[in-house]
Image 1 (cartoon, rainbow, N blue to C red):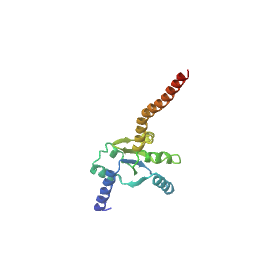
Image 2: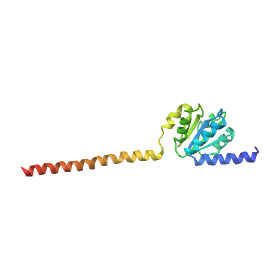
Image 3: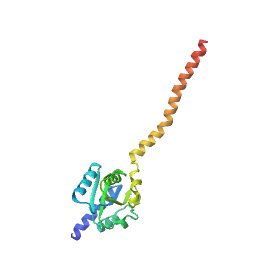
Image 4: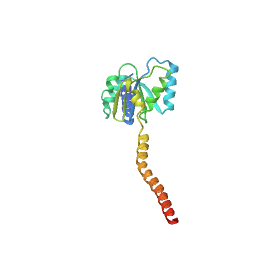
Length: 171
């Protein structure tokens, strides 16, 4: 690979890192061609982009990026695959589901909405992260709950009051 080609790859990676709020680093070494193809299909179905990159080029792209990746460049050893997604827990769910059939991919690290996770032990934490839309839905549900209680109380209270008045007038 020439120096110019490397510069182009670094620029492309820097652009992808800047455009994505969710970035996972995984190790898929040791997977045969059929298993890797199955992983790529699973990623495609989950709307996750999977790319295999050279560690040195990715490290330079992280340095050139405006984002702060903290300790992520330190995990760039061995084979590294990048997983990009719009949903914070999308790649984690793909990895967890895929590991029911295979022991790989292993999670090296993740960058999710400015938070950094290092190590495979964080996979369960990442799976349980809620997306922005799920959080907004929960907040709206919580905000609507008191209003619904007040309205139902008024409706039921009005019926009780009318029943009491009707009983008293009949006496």
